[in-house]
Amino acid sequence: MIAVATWDIVRILDTMLETLKLTKRFGALRAVDSVDMAFPKEKITLLIGPNGSGKTTLINCVSGFYRPDEGRVRYGGEDITGKAPHEIVKKGLVRTFQIPLPLYKLTVLENLLIGYQNNPGEGVAWSLLRGRWLEKEKEAADKAFTLLSLLELDQMWNRPSQELSGGQLKLLEIGKALMTDAQTVLTDEPAGSINPVLAHDFFKHMVDLKNKFGLTFVMIEHRLDIATKYADYVYAMAAGKVISQGKPDEVLNDPKVIECYLG
Image 1 (cartoon, rainbow, N blue to C red):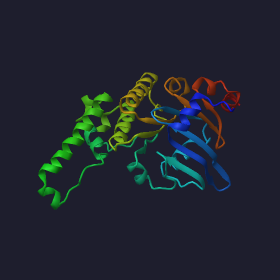
Image 2: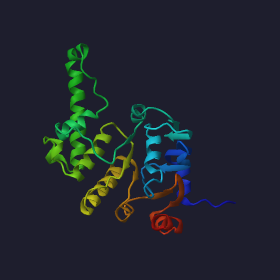
Image 3: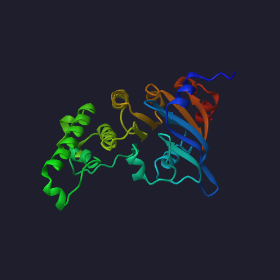
Image 4: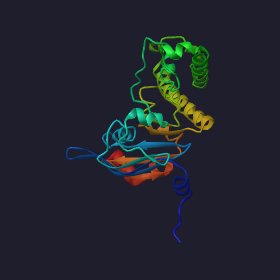
């Protein structure tokens, strides 16, 4: 009888997102080379590797910004390979970017409200149904203020987003993603360019959101000394391939990973 690790059983039974032989080429370069990954529900999975290892390209393929040349992407059991980003967002899979790009002249609250998916929009017909659109407006505001409180941005709700610090902008990006009813959030270097104290605060917020709302997080991060303290599972990539996977300590102590980083 073949022994199966407990984590592998969880992945098999409770996978939220997976890639199957996913491949993306740029000319002769195989930026992502036949990659199999499985991301369990309600876990934080960390994707690591040196620059050029294929991490961001993989996330771009998963989120619809690139169309893979081969392989499949499955989310919630559904094949989403090659779907447009806005279609993928509607299914509950949302990504944030390494450099936050809010609408700086809008307030923090207004930036969140833009992401609300259930707003009926403007029009003559809806203007006559005042009770219904007022209800939707209240739902959106209630959700936004709940997120602002959880992210500790509630004191900044009416301030222009350009007044936020780097760490607060990263949190605002997460809030914008969650306003879309996301169940899975892909984040690219969320701790980049912020000091270690704020980085720890950011990841603590991520853990709180995971536990409170049952969210799934997949994050690319180079600050391994901080991020691995909060990750449930780690994939390491190099030259477009997965070279190691497992619990954080297992991966960080894998000779292949050490050689990849240290040469």
